[in-house]
Structure formats: C-alpha cells, structure tokens
Length: 303
Image (tube, rainbow, N blue to C red; front, top):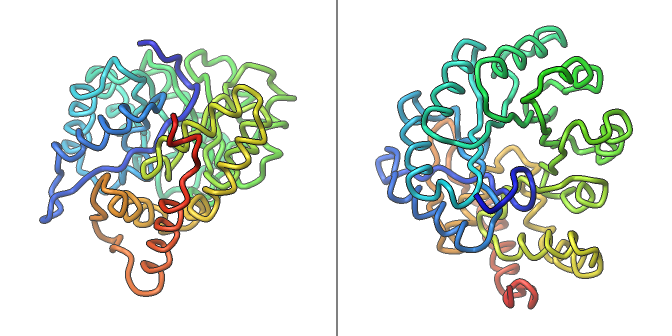
C-alpha cells in the first residue's frame, strides 16, 4: 500500500444498482476503479452515500468483497459500520476485517439516540472486536448525536480508535479537538462545503461526496492545500461550492448519484424510501453539474 491511511481525498463511494434495483457488482467495480485511476487516495465503502442501510447483510459483504477484489492493495479501503445494534456492528466489523478492508468508519447505532455512556460503550465494544484502525464519524445533523470532546476523552485509551471524520457544520470543532487532544486523533473533513476550512485547520484528509463526480478537481484542491497554495485551493473550492452545498442536504445521496450520472460515472438509481430527484430539484442539480463541467479548473485538467 503506497498511500498512507487517513491522508488525502477519500470519496464516499456510491453503491450501484441495476434497473431492477438489485446490487450491480460490475458497476460498483467500475465506479471504484475509475476513482482510483483519477488519483484518489482512499475509498469509503458503504457509508451514508453508499446507502449502507439500504443493503441486506449479505449484500454488504458482497459489495466489500467486490471492492477488495477490484482495487484492494492500491488504495486504503475503509468500510462504514452502520448498524441498528451493537451486536450487529460487531459481527459486521469482524466480517469486514476477514474480507480484507484496511480500516473502519464507525457510526453510532442507527435510529436510537444514545446517552454519552451508551455511545462510549458502543464504540468500545466494536473497537475491541477488531484489530482494524477505526475512524469515528461525527455527523450531528444526520444522526442526532454529537461525539463530544468528553466522549473522545473517554475513548483515548482504545488504541485502534485513531481518527475522526468531522461532519459537524461548525469548523471550530477542528481547533477544539486539536487543542484538547493534540495529535491523538487524526482529523478528516467530512462535510463538503466546509472541507477547505477543515484542511486549513488541521484535517489531514477529506471524506467527500461530490468527489465521486469530479475526482480530479478534488485531488487538485487537496494537493494545493498540502503545498500551501491557498490561492489555488480557494480558486478550485469556489468553483466547486455550488455542488458542494448539496452534501449538506438530506437528499445528498440522490444528488450525488445524479451528478455521477451526468458525468458518465454511474447511475442515479437509489433504493426506496429514497426516490430519484424530480422536477425543479432535479433540474437545479443538473444545472449545477453542467455549469461545473463547463468551467472545470485548468489545474485539475492538467493533473
């Protein structure tokens, strides 16, 4: 593995479905290999954008195997752990490790809103069930619970909890975490329309939704930030922002998959209860994608 874990651009990869909404493994492989060919540094599999909770247990394992077979060893593969109960999360984490992914992205248990004690217990139980490094996923708007600094304090002794994907809309969190914990937790920006702010404030990477549609531009922006060329990074960021705002909306999965389809990188098909975008919303997303396609940054094209 040439790329270090938790650094650079990690698309939150979509899961592709056939016309009958069955799992389309060849299309999943094609989507992942195309992203790797365009220079991304790692992949998030079966996260929110990957419709984790729309898949049956056996489908999740099939999707992970397909990813390992198609791009394993080329970039780090991080599997989302998004289950209803702690027991199911433990079982899935163990299976993901056996299948051969490189790390886990661990979410709070779905639906139930935990107390701080319950959240710590859930994270600890899953972490103790696997040797894989774990990135916690903090997204209070989506999952109705915040991983507070006190919770991170209590999790410090657990050695394989090593990173946090920060998707709270308040970029002050990056500084608060750095001030409290130093380098104990690697931070990754997780909300697309505050991604550059996160990189400026100490995030080592970006877990991105819209990278699935425009990977080269995403790679170019993070590369500019890494070398301290903030003028270039801002230029790409400002070009990208109308699309990046979609990541903060509740229909982000449909929007991102539609953007992929417009760019010839995948299908917009989603499983119910989600429905493909329609009407004014669909037209708005297509217009944003087409505007970005027509005005792509020169630096990204050169990359």
